[in-house]
Image (cartoon, rainbow, N blue to C red; front, side, top):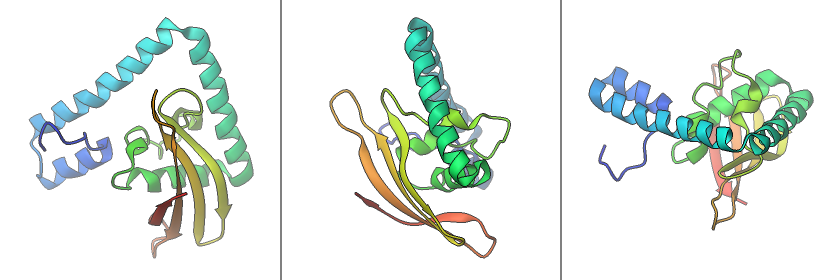
Amino acid sequence: MTPTDPVPTPQQLFRWLDNGRITPEEFRQSMAVHAREIIQEMEQAHTNPLVAKFNELMNRREAWKWSRKHGELLIREILCALMDEERFSPARWLWNAAHPHIPLHCFFRTRGTPVLRFVEMNVQPQAVTLVIEHGGSETLPPVQEQFMLRRNRRTQLFVERRQLV
């Protein structure tokens, strides 16, 4: 990894460490970047608690809407499939989506920047088609992407293809 490369997701870092692609020191440095991002979000929430609470309520509503319609297990499975997708910037927040003790609303970001929200979902027994709005900044609008997920032989969802909407 060079300093100009974007920091890989924690899941990728764990795999790379296990495979010997990176040293334990490189692993710690990269995970420190993720820790700093989390701390910055916590500081922002502390400076403006009303906005943070409103955002949390909107994220809870979004998670509830999709889990009520399709079930929490499927939503977590979709988030885990997205977590392994290369060049998908929100994957850095999804690395622990498989853990049921972490509330589902923690993975959605309906307000503020960057955004991560589901726009549309079509579920079939062996496939899921999903439109996601993600990214954005003060100057750029969020991007909408369509993901086609399919089940492999071990019945796990994986991203078969994706395209901009």
